Amino acid sequence: MRDSPISATPYEVLGVPPTASTEELRRAYRRILRETHPDTGGTAAEFHTAQWAWERIGTPEARAAYDRGATRSEPAHAAWAAPSARKPRDSRPLARSHGHPGGWRRERYLSLIREWAGRGVALDDPYDSALVRSAPRDIRHVLADALAEEASARLLSELGIAFTIWHDVATDAAGGGPAQKLDHIVLGPSGLFALLSEDWGAAVAVRKGEIVGEAIGAGERPLHALSLRARSIARAARVRFTALVIVVPDDQTEESLTVVGRARGVPTLLVQRSRLQDLARAGLAGVPPMGGNELFDVRTRLSAAIRFV
Image (cartoon, rainbow, N blue to C red; front, side, top):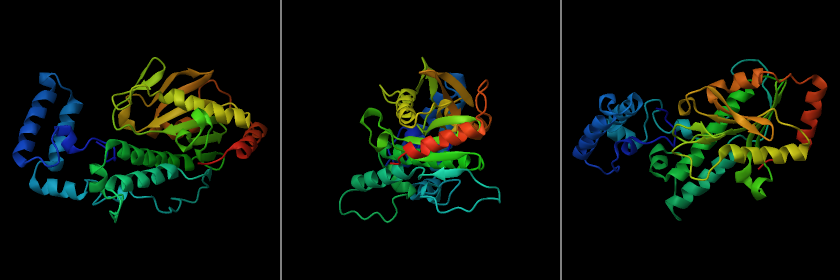
């Protein structure tokens, strides 16, 4: 399992509160093992998740380390803190990039976590893992989405100088407001893409032209929302998108790329993060590449129309 702010905690997997006694933990683990074992109707994934949870908090030493905020991959909270300036890994030119990926959600998270902690409470480190894990799921989701946007942005930056990328783009969909933003707009020889980077913390699937899952709220229509936001930019800049894309962590969908359908004639896609660069470079089958003059014209229109949240 990923160390993500929105991933189920070991306590949530075992169905016990963080205050559970050692004996309560042991009983919960045995019950979950019986329920999730493939021989008794469970699945291998559920069974392994239960074992993962026990490894994290099954002994006093492991539990104490987990409660302090340590993880297997990080000694503390460093993986969730705001990214520092990074030097390019090599001398190859990066894509032109505008805006601050994940910036609005980072600010939103900081506001929410301080409000939740309470007035007058000093938070020495708002990214402390123990603090994040104890916060309500909706607050953890905001941070998880910020991390998802930053992860996509790092991959997109490596596409090269032929690409231009805008992050945290404001739209007038549903009355506007920063929550209605497009996470990324990507322009390159393969076409023009509108992207949302999401982390729902659970598996998602495609049903009747939309993305669904146990962690997606009733009435939520992620692809429909993406379509409305992209449409406002298309109108303002007088451009047409090649595809509308929702990017998720690899473990949240079985297929690396799923063509969901079309929104007003524009293909809609669900894509694993590891497939993002390939999609941006290769584009869609049957879609001719953009020529130099067309690319320049679209970039000029977008640059004039885009505003950031």
